[in-house]
Amino acid sequence: MSRESDATILIVDNDPDLRRVISLRLSRAGYSCVEAGTGAQALSEWRRRSFDVVVSDLNMPSGDGIALADALQRDEAVPIIFITGFREDFKRRLRRVNNVSLLEKPFDPSVLIDLIEATLVRRATGDDGVRSPHGADGE
Image (cartoon, rainbow, N blue to C red):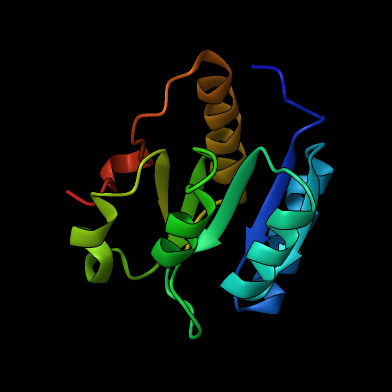
């Protein structure tokens, strides 16, 4: 599968080290990355430019990823990949979020890259269904 090298990814996580690691790995894979440490920062970045995919932590101290997804998807059905160690805590609420995939922590960065590539292909073909690698779909 060819990479969408012109794709821009918004990375949202309150852990600055994890954000940097994800950004570095995605940049090496050919993606342009923008980092945000909170949902509020992510919304600010969203208003400034468009993103092809959002990679967000689900559990953040100042607003969770689902609230962020609700705000982002008011205008556009942007694909969101949640990375989390707390899937069970959000299981019920995740069912109402469209165009979302889940990746449980700890994760292999190459799996994240594969998931981004698949998400970009789905976006290009208009498929906005829920996806989740390794059966982590919140059901």
